[in-house]
Length: 361
Ligand SMILES: Nc1ncnc2c1ncn2[C@@H]1O[C@H](COP(=O)(O)OP(=O)(O)O)[C@@H](O)[C@H]1O
Ligand SMILES: [Mg+2]
Image 1: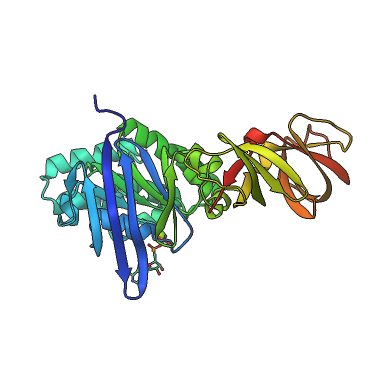
Image 2 (image 1 turned 180 degrees about the vertical axis):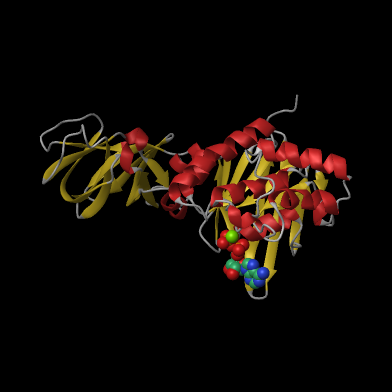
C-alpha cells in the first residue's frame, strides 16, 4: 500500500510570464497521491496557466514540475501521463461521441479492436452508454461534460486536470455533477487537480485546496483549515461570508492573547505559528454562523455584544442579520428561519471565544 501522504505532484518555485504580466509568480505546492486537489481563486489569478504548465501546454519561465518523483519540465504533453478536461469541453463538433472519445487513442496508435473496447468501457463508466453515436450538439451540457471527462480518462492518465469543468452548467446540474466527479475520483483512486473560482465547489469537493491570488498561492490546506483558519483577510473573505473586525493585541500569556476591539476586549487562542506582539494590529475573523442572536436581556455563555439589527435577509436555509455593534456591522446567520425566533431592534450577539480566529498580516 502506498502511504496516503505520498506526494504525487510537486511544483517548486514555478513562475510564468506573458510579456509584462506575471501570470504565475513563484508558486510551490505538493499534491498527495490519490487526492482531489483544487486550485481556487478569482478570475485572472493564474489557475489555468498553472494547470497548463502541469499539462505541458506552457513552459514555465522558472521552477520545476515534478510528477511521481520525476522532473517533467522537458517532457512533451502527451508523454506526461496527464490528461485535461477543458473549461469549454473543446469537443470536436464534426465527430460523434465515440469518435471524440477515441480520438486520443487513435493519435496514440492504439489498434482498432482495443480502441473500441476501451471507448465502450469508458462511455459506460461515465454514464453515456448508448449515446456513442450522437453528435455533440445533440447532447445536454452535462452530457457534453461527461464526454470531455471520458475523452480524458480513456487515455488512462496518472493524473486528471480539470479546468472549471462545471462553470458552463446551470446551478442545479452543477451541484449534481459535483458529486458525480467526486465519486468518480474516489472510484478511480486517481489524483485530480481541479480548478475553480467557486468556493462552495472547492470546499465540498476537495481533500486539499490551494487558494491563489494575483499569481501566488496564499494558503494551501484542507477545506477545514482554509475555512476556519485562514491566514489572510483576502482568503477569509474569498471562501465565504465573514466578519473581519480590526483589533489590537493588548496582552499575551502563553498561547492566549487579549485583543482589544471597539470599546471591548476578548481573550482568544493564538493560532500556532502566528507571532504576535503587544500593540500589533490584528483582525478577529468570525464566521456569521458561529454567532448567535439572543434577546437584549439574555446572558449567554461567552462574550455578549449588545447591538441593534440594521437589516436582515431571508435566504431560505438561513436568516442573515446585519447587527450594528459599536458602530460596526456584524453579519450573523441564524439557521432554520422557519423554526427560529425572529429578531429586530436591540439584540445581544453571543460569541464563544473559541470560535474567533486571529489574523495578522
Ligand atoms: N496566453 C496568454 N497571453 C497573455 N496573457 C495571458 C495568457 N494567458 C493568461 N494570461 C494572463 O495571465 C493572468 C492569469 O490568467 P489565467 O491563468 O487564465 O487565470 P485564471 O485561470 O485564474 O482566470 C491573467 O492576467 C491573464 O490575462
Ligand atoms: Mg481560467
